[in-house]
Length: 251
Image (cartoon, rainbow, N blue to C red; front, side):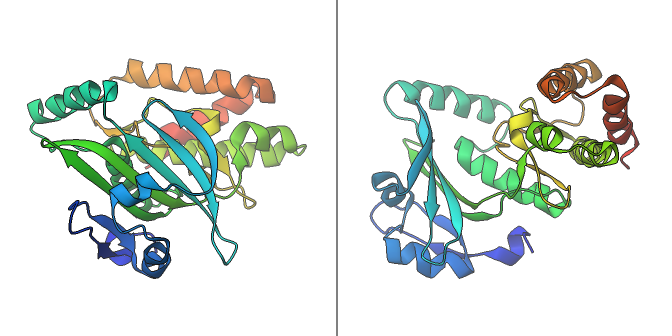
């Protein structure tokens, strides 16, 4: 199970830095062996192949000794990024919410989505480090999400019924998180994965927020942009309607 209360049971702590990591119990020995005992330790020695690099952090792909592939996301918000961290924290405080590092928030969101039955990468470990009360640094370690991006899955599928199955499962998944009150402005083809069974999964949900009253017009813009992403895969008007019908009909 991916539920938070079942799999995030280990906690390791650096006594000097005071930066806890919440760790899936079966991965605790692996992280301890690597010396990843705190957020600071992971940031100081990220391992694996760098997949993406951003001004505030990077994503690394790492293969464990048993061949399992995992991903390590880092977020450093010092220097110029520090002012963005302070601004974000103030926004959280104004809304009477606890300020969180983006990766710490993403880890929580992944666990919430898993609880409502949406396929997402399983969280192996997550944590954040505060500086002057502001969450400046963060770490998120996850399992890989199997499958390929939805646009590629559609290009690879020659069977009309198979294409409709892919679009239905994507529509149901979008409908699930919308019905649960989540808004995801980053719904893009590159963030939706289809596995061998045709099941949809979501990736990179850092920007997803719980906002049940988000306007229909805003959601319409997000879906329209997603449709543009799928246009190169030859999605017809009738096929797109199948996806939209699933979004609306998902209980």
